[in-house]
Length: 249
Image (cartoon, rainbow, N blue to C red):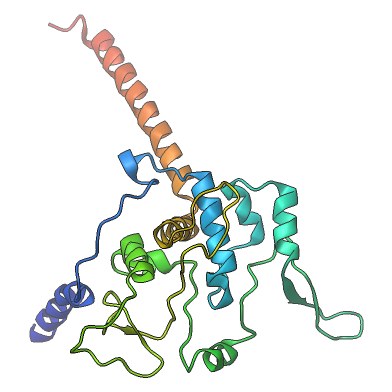
């Protein structure tokens, strides 16, 4: 009994321990406003651009295929062109050798490193996490990732920053090995949106939220259809009940 009590106590404390540190600023996310459950396509495409031009240098998204980008509003030709910018390993060929070829829509996103050791060697021993499910994998979800991206700044006088680290109060321990990833005007959005740090962070977090749950919109649509069906069914059953029992005193 003591063991079970101890386990339950630790489980109840773990969320509190995970939330140690400054309170995360709450953001308004377009895909949750009014519980509409849909993503703005322009926002998603800007977010993908930020990932592609900034984040993908270190972070992969190996659970996504290039064909999934059609859900962002890209057409078939655009998806093929995006995929063709990357090389993937294929084979063996007729000589039994592996070879590289341009990626196709059915291929998974190409990663920035050949393997885990190469990734660690390029990042002072740290392994950049895959971003496909990062929104689901972090306490605070989109608010946490947004706060992390925008939270870099000078360290307080009483905090000593280790060599190769940067101060970010939202990261556990307040020190992070990732350099500040976003700077003003870092990308040029085709729709004319100003590329501020806050704008880029919000767009890329929205894209990551979609990547973590690409079926969300379909699920909401099914939910609405189910509610309409149940409402009609309820009315029909009520009318049938009245007809069946109308002569019963």
